[in-house]
Length: 403
Ligand SMILES: Nc1ncnc2c1ncn2[C@@H]1O[C@H](COP(=O)(O)OP(=O)(O)OP(=O)(O)O)[C@@H](O)[C@H]1O
Ligand SMILES: [Mg+2]
Image 1 (tube, rainbow, N blue to C red):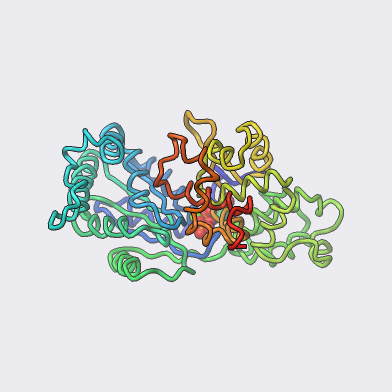
Image 2: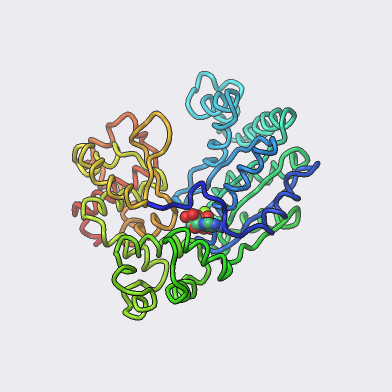
């Protein structure tokens, strides 16, 4: 499958110039990338990550995810896990090792009148990041701020206030989300302190370049309707191209004809639906379940939920890997996958109307899903699996009142 991964960016030269000036100078800087879903924020942020590394900066990248409830400090855990041994040890002590948590003792002290445990944590994180920044210039990249959990928002405020003179920050954020009050305050402060880039759709020339990259040479008469149709959305271009390749539409018809026959779906959502519709039912079922877990998911959890062998689930998801909808995550664990783009997951999740309500009724789902609860790898309070359990129960009809 042709893919834009690791290929040079189309366009965005002006933006890269601005970001380089803001982040790679003598003093640390702040940049916020805003734009609609699929316009290319992550792609540009990753290009900046590579550029920053080429310039000798140390880059730590963390992501916020659309989960309910949001996982506290997840972007911080991700960033610290990339910060060498000191960072990994910090995360291990903080999240796992109660005995080793002496230094973080206050974090466990929730008695009335005790200091807010987060204060200690923030101070220690600040110290650790300052230490890194003293050795190498440090850039933090935080992706998808619109989904930031309240604790991460507080931490970012603290880093801006107390460590902004040592650490650079690049964040991405969807422009069509209404922020909570605390997020709006943070965004306002980021805007005041640095450079805000509203990422525009690609120009017609850039759209044509990307289309050619994805589909090979096209006649002008084929190109024009596709460029108009995509409205400059790189996500739509890439997805439309994948759909055209898979369906063979371009071979049978000229592009304009295909469009006029209305055989090409009309919006991003429809383009993605068309790709999902082509999946065999077990693959679609596995992806639906995965969408409830999160952007990243583990096959053992899916196989427990579906009460089937992990091998069956592996077969089911293989089709989605071939289609470029999900990818195997790097690392020792060969059963962890991630959606290749958040919109795939969002689309699947939205097609499950009862998921969110089912999650609140997880208590009644528990007896049926005992095997999953007993798995040591699935902590009781792990909210994604909680939601998966509820989802499984809902599919199995164990929660009929919510249909
Ligand atoms: N400048 C570009 N050149 C080439 N391909 C691009 C460019 N920008 C985006 N793409 C392609 O478009 C797709 C969507 O881009 P990306 O994931 O960066 O969007 P996003 O703004 O981060 O979306 P979201 O808000 O959903 O996170 C990607 O698959 C990427 O390969
Ligand atoms: Mg993104």
